[in-house]
Length: 179
Image (cartoon, rainbow, N blue to C red; front, side, top):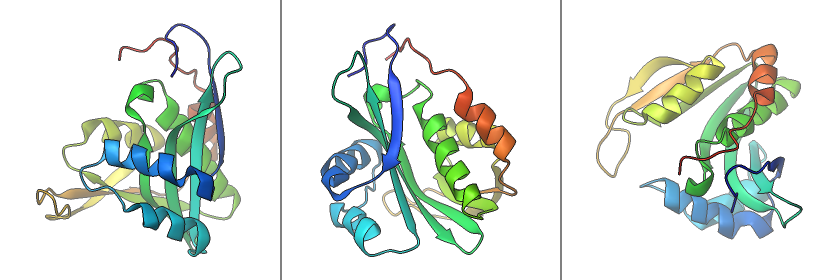
């Protein structure tokens, strides 16, 4: 757990099988329709289009903790963001921005030039973060979410802008948490 007011270090690395339980716990805590745990195993082991990444944090030399994850699918020159989440105690610190910027930069370096995702119409915080990257609403998927029939906004980033990603990645983290 991050102690407010003290600096901490985020680290991004590929997701491994040993991370699946913790990643799934973050998913369950973050979404009303979490992925089954086996889906993460499939993404790591069997889906060649999948790029799964986690964000760890450590403070004062302590053991790193997984604080967030993203799963993207690379299809030709497009990246579809399947899921992204930051665990509740680590939200509003800038970690989601760092994780997304890093994942999109990795995609860009691999030849990806546009990205898209679906987000709940009611998820204003996520939409605001995506808009920082240049994502724009491109359409609506009516009654997309099966738990409550909520619409999904289809957001598209075209083109991916490496200079903007670099700026967002280097923007300072928020050391003090209001949580």
